[in-house]
Image 1 (cartoon, one colour):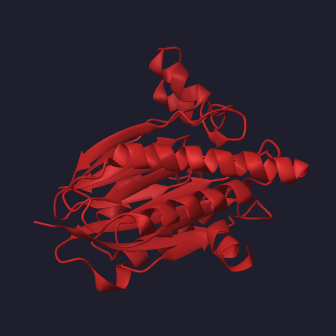
Image 2 (tube, one colour):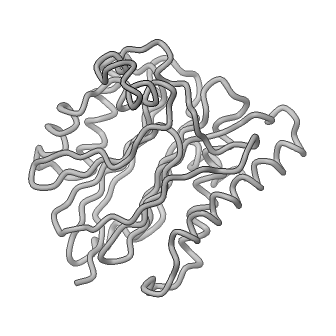
Length: 265
């Protein structure tokens, strides 16, 4: 069985930011969210360039991905982004130090190929159970892994957003790459930390299992994050695994900085 997607994307500046440094995109087989690094120069450029490189990669891949080494393709795309960012920083010195997180899923028909750097996240809802499929590359998560603090303490730690890994001009990318088996009826959430800094896993589980369509859920997640203070940019993709693929989800849709970038660059 070759499965497809029914997806929706939404991005919002939030309540406390003046610009949206998040970027995202969906196609019939690619889902991606990138969060430009806060406190760094021109994070919106880094996130938009990352999304652009991934959508270009997806567009040039063959329809049948059976014999394609997707881990190599994803790694090469991340290397390509790093080169683009470095070149841009060389041309425009005020962009030096820009960077971004990235989470992406590429559909093969029976699996997802996953790529992840940073603290944006991917969740799967299956049979009512919510599973986080990514592991945050943050200083606080490292402290949790080492047993120095609890997960509850990490959620409120003042340095919870300090990244240990990101996509940037400073060093070669160190992504987590994986393959995820999929089932019809699975629901996936890709989001920036503007969602997870406000909404805990139980709220996410309730919203994702509500029975609402993806478009309704992304709108609801943005609204809830803003109601909780909207401290950061907010981006969410919700995608259902369906058979047959949803025709309305086949084209390229962009959001946040990727939408602005695609029309002005």
